[in-house]
Length: 139
Image (cartoon, helix red, strand yellow):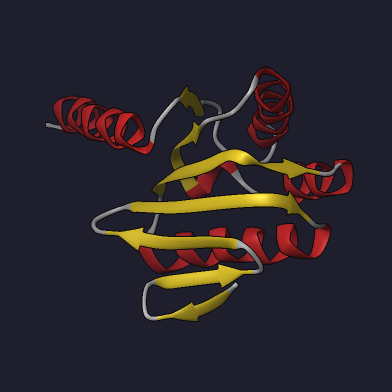
């Protein structure tokens, strides 16, 4: 994905970082293996730059081919995320995503939250609530 300040683009797919700790990625149409590779590199770089973060992935208007799913499950790490919140996933995509999330458990930490919501507003609300829970546990 090409970086321009805090905005990225790869084909029809876009992402931007929202302070303090959230990457919002919006996918539209088919996601090729090359685009998955660029996206995973973005996710890894975001973790390197900001530490663990929330990923809001708006996937309701996208399709991920088998090779891309396999690549993501092999190369991404659950250690990069506080949680991944998927927006707009239909039942088929939810099944694929759950399989990827299970594979991510083998790459890093033992707990990992995967959440499905209908809108980006719901995703941001979930992130805000999760931050409060983490704060209350820490403090």
